[in-house]
Length: 394
Length: 141
Ligand SMILES: [Zn+2]
Image (spheres, each protein chain N blue to C red):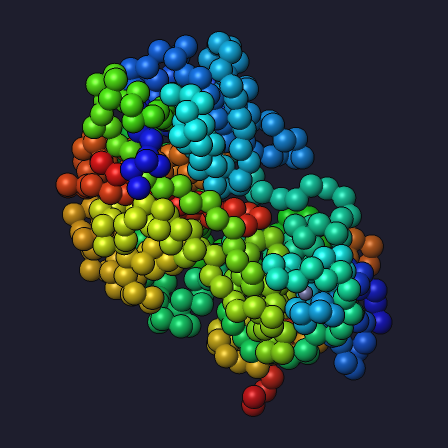
């Protein structure tokens, strides 16, 4: 379905870390880098699509218009998309719609975040109507959910904490040479096992941190790409941002119960995201060269591998143990180093995944290059029924 | 009996405590916490709900613990003691509900598939003792 495709002309990132700067600086740095990579003048960008975040109840804190002003207002149309972890993908989908409708040729998609210090926690006050307040009052924090999913794997498939640690070791080895990664250190299984238990079976090194960072890309119509001599640029072949389907089978943050599956069958959400992307791109999991997935925890990466249908249910740990998910293996997962090496910068993260696929498909990923990469897929999921999966083709 | 940790989520009945949910009177979907405005089943537009007690026991779907003290509004014991957390599947409701596990039961004592029963336990509140629901493994089940 090539009539749905758009070209990725350029990508750029501000390195992830804890830099203590304003998010706008990260976004501008990423955008300028993407513009330079694309070789497109800023004034040719006619649509600016920003991944937004909501912090302390102030929507628009990270907005397309903010970046457009920082880069120099030149009369482009703007958009801000909020979709938790999938914000970047929704901003990208907005740009794609604008381009495919013929309303513009070139768009900038950008997301950036500055993460507050300390643990994420709910706003103050007694708010029993707010599910986030309720679950914290009951002692159910973010790691609780990841740990419940991880323990379920142990109970159903026989996965072990060593299997989870192997994901961290692998991702640390991948991200070791990535200039945009925050953590550039190799870790051993012993290092993971020696880190503090947070929510059994997950230890500190099984759970991703939060980071500052920025990611951006310049996308265009295929005609425009050809016109500027970039007809062979990687293309976006699918963007899936589907909601869950009732009755959603997993208990998801911040809820304290699942949907009831009395009147409708219980359905998985994560697996629905790539399923829609495959359908849209007209390809299947057998066509995938590599995947960037949302490893909020090490165990969650194993769930994603199965949700992407890259192996049968329950076999992701064996696949990882066999080295097949490492660069050089059959289906490398998180060649960038993943969230394990980056930490999560919410509105930028889904775009960072697409940036990595772009570098990989161009053969520009340096020591972490996946040989002969032709098709890549991303997957992420966050709060409030948001998630996304993007397919990029060489 | 102390006041509940959060009003309206469960009955403060020491002998037969239950979680208080609601049920769509058209399609039968259960809700916890209670839903009384609109049914979330895409094939149902009912706005009528009955308040119902949820099943008091279910099977353990998964479990974990909290090794670190959560931030407010959690009120922790002094000194903080790690506690286990259970995800329990209720058969009739076809729903998984979270909750802490009773004191003295840790992750090493738990396994998926165990029968768990709802009980009440005292917990600290900002201004004195409160009571909350906890899941307790049923011996010999
Ligand atoms: Zn209904």
